[in-house]
Length: 490
Image (cartoon, rainbow, N blue to C red; front, side):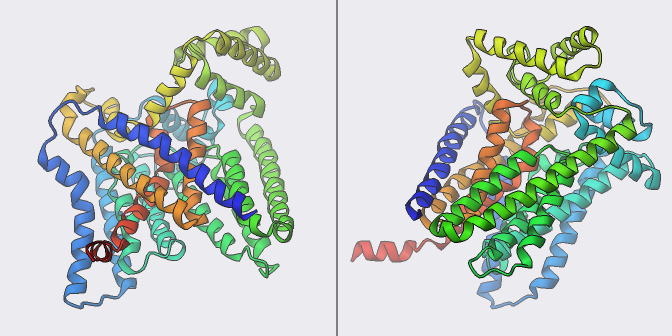
């Protein structure tokens, strides 16, 4: 069993390494112009340099600081930076596309059959926002403040994960938090009326609790802790999946990690794995049923899970849309609704049949999948892209935004490069918590391949890459290079 466990570590890490090495190479190849030195310094060198200079200064002069008070100062600074960026940008933009629909629905809730039936998570977000607007008003400033608070809370748990679960001691725990807090695309996206920051906070919080569960998941674990963590994790996944449908990927992710952990003593752990799975599924299925009833009562629309899933697959895999939503999809849905009325089962069945035929006849199907991966992973300036689309003064040529675009992309490639180094270390030390980030990202890759692909979808999953990059930097810093050189010379 242990050999199987080791084999799975190598397989998952190897898949990640191959996919993202290709993405890194292809992405870097996009730079066909000279890059200004100051951009390179700011985006790639400044953040880690500040961190290492501070660490060196404290060690050099034997200065000891209270980590607790420094943490408070750090997170207040993070919140301030987030809030300033969000407020300044919110004055320059206006909601467009899905953001506009969500914002208008939050101000004055009205039902829209296509929007609410096919994309209920956006409707759920508008309902939540509607409640918040009733208390604080419907100004975009409210959204900017809300996203800044959620972003800061996410940063707090990034720090907590690094300190408690990745065993990053002292100031090392601030490294992933620093990368996370200063990530350019995240800062640019803060003013947008979107559920991404809620989902991001949810994913990080659930990860933190699942790692706590893994620590309790031992042969002699307390019977009280396991049900508490199982129930808490399932309830949180059910809640945050209201704003980003992620129940399935979390279920598969948890199952893979628990099975790998169980393999060395499978007979002893088998019952506990089954116990977690049963609790998780019961909570998720019950939550889905309750949500569907509330949703129907609030919107007078009856949700059909099979139609929602089929539509996501259709948008992602049909040759006309080429992996993205476009008006062709809306026209096809109009046609199906005129033909079948409100019979969602017939609509889903017809859509499924057409998609299968489309895939069979599409000679460029595999090229389309590669382009979808390109869209999701090669570039990383979705914040800048959407600000440009949403500018009150009108769009400008992206070539005029070359500096911040390159800054954002270079920061991403820097993270990606060290994430690959981090994965190499995971296969060596067999740390299950670190493998979790790899499997999580591969799950996101699977979603991109079979569903719709957008550059901004990466935001909620970004913390995984940041953790892997921090692990890679930490591994390099801990590498005994002096001893190795000395031994080699001797």
